[in-house]
Image (tube, rainbow, N blue to C red; front, side, top):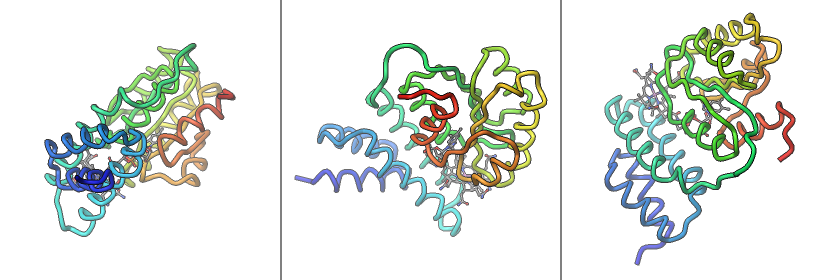
Length: 217
Ligand code: B12
C-alpha cells in the first residue's frame, strides 16, 4: 500500500503535468488517508504551481502546459474548498477583491477569497483584469472596509499604483483600507504607493486584514 507521502507527491506531480483526472483521484486518496486539507494546499498544491512557474521561466514548458496545470489546481481547490475550517457567527467585515487590470491570474486570489469567507468575512470578488474605477465603484456600493488587490505580473505594477491612487482620490479614500498581494509585489513597493498592508500568502492576508480592522480573533 502507498504511504500518504507517496500519494501527496503523486498529487503534486499530477498538477505539475496538468493531469486533472489523476490529480483529482490522488486528492481523493489523500483525503481518505485523513491528510489535513490545508496541508495538502499549502505543502503540495501551491508548491506544484511554483515548479510549473520555474519550468516556464526555464522554457521547459509553455503557456498551454501552464494553463492545464492551473486548471488541474483549480479543480482540486473546488473539491477542497468545503473541507477547510469555517468560522461561523457575525460577519467580520466586507472585502472587495480583484486581480489588477491587465492580469488574468486568479488562483491565488481565489485562495484568499476562500480563506476570507471561511474566516467570516463577506467577500465581493470582482474577478480578473479589473480596472481601477471598478474597485472604487464596488467598494462604495457595498460599503466595504477593505479592498484587496492581487498582482502576479511585474508589468502590473503601474496598474496597482493607479488602483491605489484612484481609491485614495475617491470619496472613500480616507476610510478604505487597502491590502495588496501576489507574487509580483514587494512590501516596499506596496507601502510606497500608499496601500495599508501587504501579505505574501492567503493565511497572512487574513491575519493582516484582521489587524488593520483591529479584529482580535
Ligand atoms: C498558472 C499560471 C498562469 C496561468 C494562470 C491561470 C489562472 N487562472 O490563474 C496562465 C497560463 C493563464 C498564465 C498566463 C500568463 N503568465 Co503566468 N503563471 C502561472 C504560475 C505558474 C502560477 C500562478 C499561481 O496560480 N500560483 C499559485 C498561487 C496560489 O500563488 P499566488 O498567485 O502567488 O497567490 C498567493 C500569494 O501571492 C497571495 N496572494 C495573491 N493574490 C493576493 C491578493 C491579496 C489581497 C493578498 C493579501 C494575497 C494575495 O496569496 C496566494 C495564496 O497563498 C506563475 C508562477 C508562479 N510561481 O507564481 C506564472 C507567472 C505568474 N506567469 C508569468 C507570465 C509571464 C505569464 C504570461 C505573461 C505568459 C505569456 N507570455 O503570455 C501570461 C499572462 C496572462 C495575463 N495577462 O495575465 C510569470 C510572471 C513574470 C513576472 N515577473 O511578471 C510567472 C511568475 C511565471 C514565470 N516564472 O515566468 N499564467
